[in-house]
Amino acid sequence: MRILITGIAGFVGSHLADLLSPKGAEIFGTCLACESLDNVCHVKDSINLIECDVTDFDSLSRLIHRIKPEQIYHLAAFSSVGESFARPLEAVEVNVRGTLYLLEILRNIKKRIKLLVVSSADIYGKVSRNDIPIKETHNLNPVSPYGSSKACGDLLAYQYFQAYRVAVIRVRSFNHTGPRQRLGFVVPDFASQIAKIDRGRSRPVMEVGNLNAKRDLSDVRDVVRAYHLLMEKGEPGQAYNVCTGKAHKIETLLNILLRFSTRKIKVRKKSTGRPSEIPVLSGDNSKIRKDVGWEPRISIHETLKDTLDFWKEKYNQSQS
Image 1: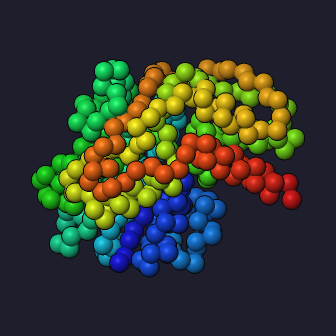
Image 2: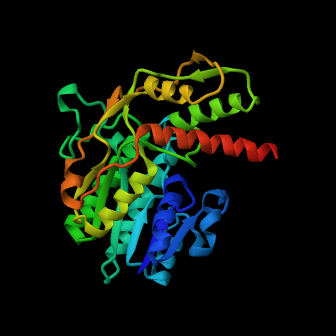
């Protein structure tokens, strides 16, 4: 089995590599020339890293024709909702063009290659309380450049399945976190600040954004297990939510992390600066449970503790 993971050096890609490496498959992964490989250094001997930008059609086409993968996990993406408001052109370039290029390449290959395209719950946008938890049949009403770009990629994947029978599965992932997630996302932003304070590298004051939003938050290790099960058992043409089915208030996540701290920390609120924000995102995961037998296993407390420990270890290493 030959597997290609686009964006393998990223947060989710590295955890997917961790999951798949022991299974005996030959794993290839794309990364950018300027990208840090810290996330995959521990598995570098069991994967084949290749510099390739998914927005470069010719390079991506040559790569796929050369390695001839049987499965492709498409994880390379512009992944930040907040940053997409300042950089909408980049979000569309990577998330729309990169996905379209991959679909077009597979359309013109006779051999059937199974493709998993990672979309996002942000494509649903602001949803009324009567429609929560959100099902896969809900309308797409994105309210950010990121959400809009992911919605375009999702619809293109569906169109290529309908018109050309490209064997693509769409995954609508709700929020997920864990060790290795970069700064710019709520949990690592909280955890990194607490870790600095605990290590005496910062005064005991945290700056936080909107604490009232509610998010359905999964552990990244549960999420990549869902991706693998969908690749093995999911039905091409279908869309699947990956979520826990329960929304946590951001303030609750912060309070759990603060309880793990050894210091008394003052919390100071600041504006996020986003033109629009979704108040509640919570998904219905009954379809993925029924079709492939997936369910989340890792508790929110374990996820948050592991993420905080990751940042503490990171700052320990930087001091040594």
